Structure formats: C-alpha cells, structure tokens
Image 1 (cartoon, rainbow, N blue to C red):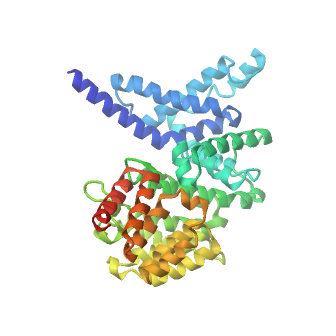
Image 2: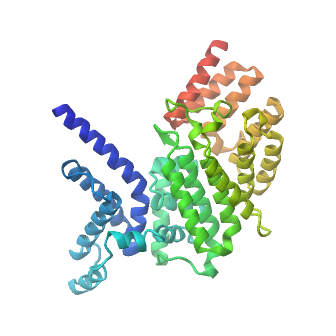
Image 3: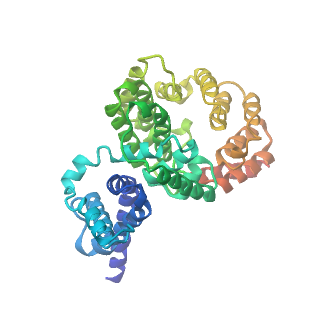
Length: 428
C-alpha cells in the first residue's frame, strides 16, 4: 500500500510538473498583465506557490477539471492576499484598500480564458521588447517571463553563462521599472521598433521545443505549439506584418511537421538519413507551404523567408538521397549574408559537407573556430568531430566529440555523441 501511494505521488508530481512547465509562461503573463511589472518578484512567488499548493492538494482531492484555471486562480488569490494585507505596496491602509479594490471583481475561469489568455502573453512580449533594452536583454527577459524558461535553458539557447543570464534578467527588470513602461500592446509608431525582437523570441521558443537544450527529452512539442500560437496571434493582430509573420509560421509548421520522425521507438535521436519520412505530418507541412506562399506578398525578404525555404527543400525530398543540397547551400549563402552569425555559418558548413566535399566544409568551419561562442557550443565540436572522422583524423575526431559531450546538456543528444565516439575508439 505504501509503495502504491509513493507511485501515485510520483505520478502526480510528474503531472503537475509537466502542466506547470507548459503553463508557467502563460500564467506569469496573465498575472503580470493585471498587477504590473512593479510586482514581478511577487508574481513569480505566487506562481511558484500555486504549484506547491497543487502538489499538496491534488493527490488528495484529485486533479481539477480545469487545471490551468486552478493554477491561475490560486496564484491570483496569493497576489490579492498580499495586496490586501499591504505586503506589496508602501502606502497607508486607505491607499492599499483602494488599490486592492481594483482587483476584487476579476473574471472567473471562463472569462479569464476568453479575455486574458488571448493577448496577455503578447502584451508581455512587447513589454520585454522595449527599445530601451538591448537585444540580448529583450530575448533573455522574454524567454524567462513568457516562455517560462529556467536560467540553464536560457543560457543554452543564447550561448551565455548562467550567471550572465541572471544579471541580464535583473538589469532588464530594473530598466523597465525605471521607465515605468505599461504592459500593453504598442501603437503603430512603436511597433516597428519592437516587432523584430518579438519574432526572434518566438522563434527561439520554438527552437527550444524542437531541440531542448537540456534535460531528458529531445523535443518539447508543447513549446513549439505555444510559439505557433503566439505567431498566429500576431498574425491576427497585425495584418500589415503578414509577410514576415507568415514566413515565420511557414518555418515553424514545416519543422513541426517533421518532429515526430526525429526520434526512434525508444526515444533515441535519429540522424536525418535514418528518419522514417512516413511519420511526417503532411497536414502541418501543407500549412507551412501555404504560409510560405503567402509570405511572398510584398518586397521584404527576412531570415525567416530563407530558413523556411531551406525547410521546404527538406520537406520536398521523399527520400534523404533526393535532398537538393546544392540549393540548400545557395540558400545558406543568402542567409549568411543577411544574418552573418556563427550559428548560420556552422549550419552552412554542414550543407557544404553534404553537397560538396568534407575538406571544403572543414575549411568553412575553421573560419568560425576562433569565435568565443563556438568554443562553448557543443554542436560546433560535434560537427568538427564528424568532419575530422571523414577526413580520417580519428584521434582528433575522438577528442572533438569528447569536448562536445562535456558541453552537451541534453541526454538524448549526449547518447548519440557517445555512440559516435565509441565507434571512433576502435579506429584510433
């Protein structure tokens, strides 16, 4: 009996953790849109408290019919209680009471879903995209406040040390508080200065779901779906920006359509050439192609247009050997001109490896070898190891894969690297 209770408690903890991981960004955004940025620390505490109360009560009373609504109402009550007792504001009792009265008649669960969930996260995303913040601060804060990412996840997504991520969050909050920025959607005059950061953040959220930076899972489809949802909201709210938003949606749908084939029956990571393409979701791919066609309206060509075209090349190949790698190299050439980042150039070197020769690809890789960000990026060393193995320098390839394994925080990818290194061990 005791063992059954422990098993049930463990299952409940996993259920709550998964729900909370999926909902924490939405939950924080909802509470923040009501109570304001000045209470962000208290909001985080309230959101955490809602999780603790769920862990305490759900094993005994069962999971509520609307778990997300339950978490929201619990976090909201914690905030209201703090306001009612004057713990969040430094003012006289009358002022505290007046402030608290604003929130006495907040909507019930159904109304919350209808009224707040539609745009609360977008409000917070645009808050985080304030022009006073640098790009790195914008991205870091949005991933934290909207995506619900932890410091380790953010550090992996942005290739930054965890201590640096913590400092960025504190600095960004301080700047926004000092500017007294309201949590609302921007007008037309402000939109152009913030939309690029918003799109980039949504894409980073999708990437974290498509390939998790850390943990025991390779993918987090719920994050991908959330990123798509936010982009769809943008599309509805800002029709003048349709071409670039359509391009981003095309890229996400085309990749999401192939996500199921990335892992085997045991959850192991499958290289592209080993993936079962019959597992692709053709309905999602078709939606991606539709958005890609729509994105052609207008004169603008963004990085999302080019990356979506690359994804479309992969989707067009019924079998791996039919992939149009020369076309993909051409697209990466365009992308590297538009976005000359080391990550883009790393991916370009892989395309060159597939389309041309290992030595040419290795030369392209060497051009970014001096970049400090690449020194701490596991995929750089993993790609370098593959190139060295194909050249025939097995000892150097073994060392490169060893470095990649030390830097890799995702268990599924780590296991694949370990298998590749084990094969090299015999050849050294």
